[in-house]
Length: 431
Image (cartoon, rainbow, N blue to C red; front, side, top):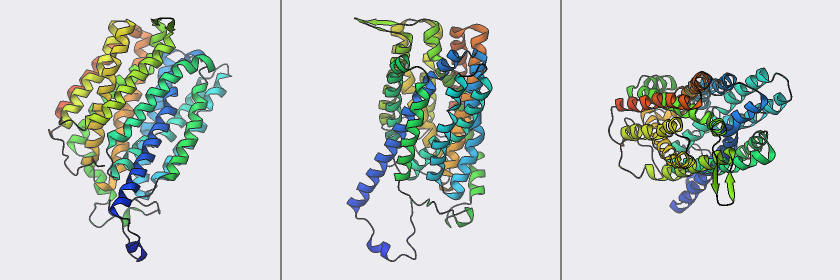
């Protein structure tokens, strides 16, 4: 991105050499990889075992669904505002720090609520606050990665690797330390995340409080760029597909640990017998490990964004259908690879295409809208739909139902009008 040096003659002589610039960029990329790793490993335990913790508190399936809805819905409401604030004030790092610290404090409502006879109200309030404060972290960090020209997949892969490690570790850790350990682990990781954020260098989006009136002369203003984005046909198609796919994925993920316990899935490996919680951890590790590798290789293919979205959508939903048809442990573990590959395909297609469609002025806004209105709103609906189906028809039929909605989301991807890897506005994949 263009960086002004007007009024600072010393900056001419201080301009880094080609080698120096390359080393600086590589150092920045490593810090972003560390940021995604810490963020996802801290989030993995809470995401995977949250409903197990809530079930231990005595909450019903419907109440767990409502908590899950708040977890997503509050973020949906907050994310567009965070994105606009980030683009207007160019305060990416400050917002990430506020999100990390605030969300960590909000999660203390869980151990406090666990000591109450009726914890639902406190847990619901804490969850909503956690969601609203945490919501800008992923989209704004993604926007920072893309605006610096880095390959999103090579950075996001570290998040998937962290999720694999965290899911596997928590599968055993919860059995030894109890479900409350997922809360304190997130709080510790949030502190480390804040330290990494402050070490990130600035780019052209300097955090000096500059408003929209001081945008570059050759760029559209914030209002014009935002209006062009939300009226773009391909962007609306991406949002619709992301909504339905995330509905299916989130509903399945939220109750996966509960599913493993309810159907009493276990697997003997010689003298070692994996309990349902252990199986949950292993399944998540396989899924996320394959996902990490897939993120590295998806962009190396010649598949268009349209077919990445459609093919990835079908692939990522297949595990939910399988959960509703069989409880064979080996089969349940085998389909995890499909979930990981499909998720990487969908994520790269949606994130990169949304970035290419958007003007430079609304980098964070584009990712916030995709994450909020697409993934976030879909995930919120998935919590309610899955929780309601769980109480109405049982957990296996619930998985069949949400898989149908996921396949519909993949079909929506067919409406993407571009069939190439180049976007309508600008190319995003870089170093």
